[in-house]
Amino acid sequence: MQLDFFKKNIGFVTIEELFQAYRCCRRSKRNTFNALAFEIDYESNLVKLCEEINNGTYQPGKSIAFIVNKPIKREIFASDFRDRVVHHLIINKLNCFFEKEFIYDSYACRISKGTHFGIWRINRFIRQCSQNYTKDCYILKLDIKGFFMHIDKNMLFERLETFILKKYEEQDKNLVIDLCKKLIFNDPTKNCIIRGKKENWQGLPLDKSLFHAPLNCGLPIGNLTSQVFANFYMNRFDHFIKHDLKIRFYGRYVDDFKRLPKIRVTAYFAP
Image (cartoon, rainbow, N blue to C red; front, side, top):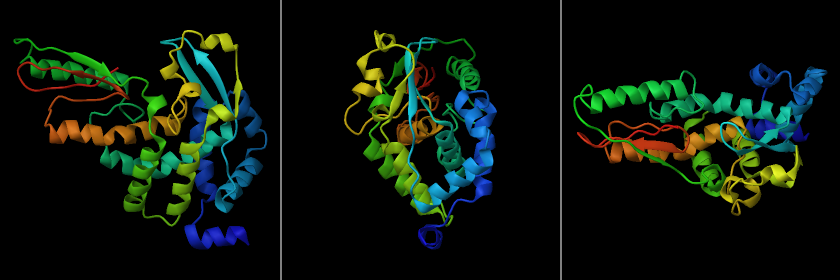
């Protein structure tokens, strides 16, 4: 009865969509313990997950929290594999709409973009700004302190909900909004397994840990949705720099950015 209600009122996710998300997810996580455990009976697991999503009972599970030290010391929250499938499901549905909104020179977590593309672009910008190395130009490198840990969840969800209502026309619109809300407002610090020793957190700045994030702030590093939602969160800033300030040479990689002012007003954001 409850499932029929959801199908009638907010559409539903098909098992085919969930299987596609599962295949995307397993490409990079197939050999992890959680992935292997899920794969033992993946058909039943996907059917159960599909039912939970469609009847509204799905809730994110436990994450594994740990510290990595390369390239820099960073706190990671690794979601359970079934939750990663949901992340891919959401991004598969929304990414084409995000891509139409993002500026060309936003590089993180985008197909055919990334660090190598960003490096190529900054080299091109420097050549153009310096008139093929015949004039001086300068680079101002900046970033947003504690970016992921200070993303305002209320602001992010409000913008995302408005965006989905305006751009996404499928019948499962409200269901997608509900899933986004559950993921954004889920606090992984309240339901996580610590891998390694607590001493591993020593030396990590407090503004780089979700355990010390302000109330209703912060997305976990390590989730696909965190990366893409962070791009969406910064999209207004990108358009402000690019179109309102009319800065020609501009690009961004997550929260890092640079500026090259000399001949023209220019800027570039890169890691």
